[in-house]
Length: 405
Image 1: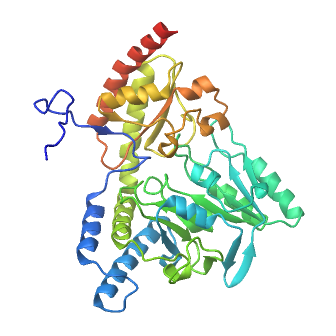
Image 2: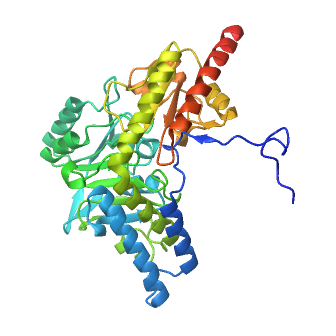
Image 3: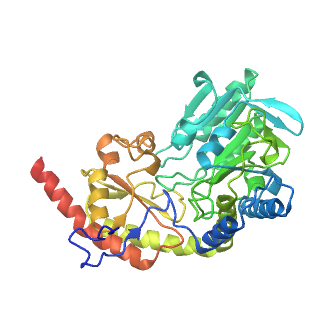
C-alpha cells in the first residue's frame, strides 16, 4: 500500500517538523512511560489472577499506584485508577461517601464557574443541588461567595461538597485551593480538586492543601491516554455508589479488569514528572515569559489573559483583539504549529469560552483568544518558531478580516 505524502505537493518536498504547543490537551508520551507501557504489554497477565503472571501484573499496578501517590502526597491505597480524569471526576462528584467506616452524605455541590466541562457536566448531583460560584477578573474563585454559601447551607443543616480546580486549563491561573478547603472544613464539607493541569507543573500535597479527593489524568503529564486516577487523602475514603460495578477490582471502588499497560505508563510518567518538577517549572516559565513578551511587543491589540495572576508555568492564553481564534488556530496549523482555541475537550463547539465569559470578557475579546501550552518536550526553538509564525500570521489574518468587513 502506498502511503500518502507528508506534504501536499508531493513526497519530494520534505515536511517541516511540527511544533506541539498544546500540552494542556495532551502531552507527548515520555520515554519512561513508553518503556513501562511496552514492558507491560509484552508481559501480559491479569492483575486479579493468583498465578505468577497475574502477580507480576499486580506488581506493575502497585508500583504505578505508589508513583501516582507520591506525585500528589497521598497514601498509595488511596489511589483509584480510572480511564481518565473525566471518569475520576464523575466518581468523585456524588453525594454518598464512606469515610473511616461511616456514611457521609453531601446535600449540595458548590463549584466555580470556570471548572472544566468534566466537572460542570460530569457530576452525579441533582441539578437543583448544584451551585456555580463567581470568579474575579483573573478567573480566581471568589472566596467570600464560597464562605457565604457554605455558611448558609450549614445553617440549614446541609453538607456541601466543594469542587475547585488547581489550575485553569485555558488560562493556567492557579486557584486558591487551600483557602477553599479550609472554608469547606470549617462548615463540615468535603473538598475535591481537579488537579489535571497542575500535576507535574506545581508541587502537590493533598494533606497540606486540605483535600479529601483529587483527580488526575495520565496523558496531560506525558503518560498514555486512557488512564487517570481519583485519589483519596485517606485509604478509608470510598464511594458508596461506584460508577462501575463488577468483580471488585480497585478494592471494590471501580469494577473491571484494569488497563495494566496504561496504568504502568501513568506511574512512570508521574514519577518522571515529580522528579523533574522544580527544574521544569523554571525552564517552562522562562519559555512562556519569552513567548508572551515577544508577542505582546510585536503585535498590537494583544493581551495575556490572567497575566497578572499566579499561573502554572507552562500555560499562556493570549487574546488577539478583533480576530477569530479558530482562524488563528488553522493558520498556525498550516505553519506546523499546534495550539488550541480554549479547551481542546470543547474544540468542536462554536462559541465564546465559558471561562473567559466568567472573567468578564465580552464575545469579541473572548473570541480571539488562543491557548499555547508547553511541556516536557518543548524547546526554545519551538517557542521561537511560534513567535515567528504569529508575527507573520496575525497581520495577514487581521488584514483579511478588515477587507472582509
